[in-house]
Length: 114
Length: 112
Image 1 (spheres, each protein chain N blue to C red):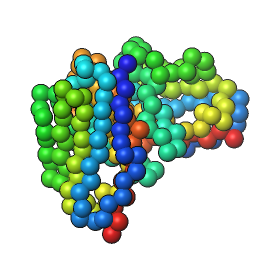
Image 2: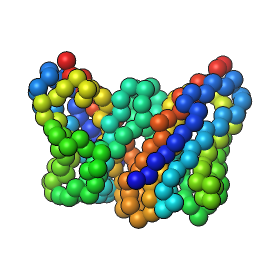
Image 3: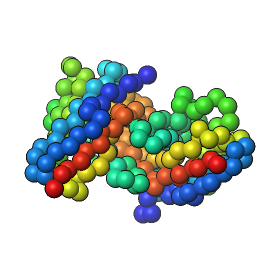
């Protein structure tokens, strides 16, 4: 079992460009979550998805950010027109039904906006 | 929504001493309380969790306690070792819903 796979590990974007972050959950996990971590800060919830459905996006900024988890393929977190404040580590986690065993996190994508 | 408070934000202990990290939560519906350890530059990893039908759980040098009446839970690490140095996050999840809310984290330094 390869665990939760995130790519890329590091992503550098210029202001105004788009960033696409990918997450493949663990085999058998049907729930995907995205969290953002700023330096020296905790993990802030962004969005919770199941296949083809956004369940809770209460932590997502209203503009420029979107997420999807299609029937086939990885979950995608998309940030349009990036700004310096978007620089952070973005972690994806997955879980089985009922949170048995808790979340398993991916290694994260460290986004740097220059 | 749920709010998780965690303290202290930093903690330094001598190797071999115990470390205690405390958290409180606001949503009385929360029934799942995991703890994660994050080493520098790495992913958070689950180290122990407790559900609301249990008051205490132990795994080798790590133990968690839960007081549902007071809405607080704690992590206890005994006989600390340098490799315990990391940031520790407490978290809470409401029953029937899988979103997990994290505390701000505690940076633990174990001094050899």
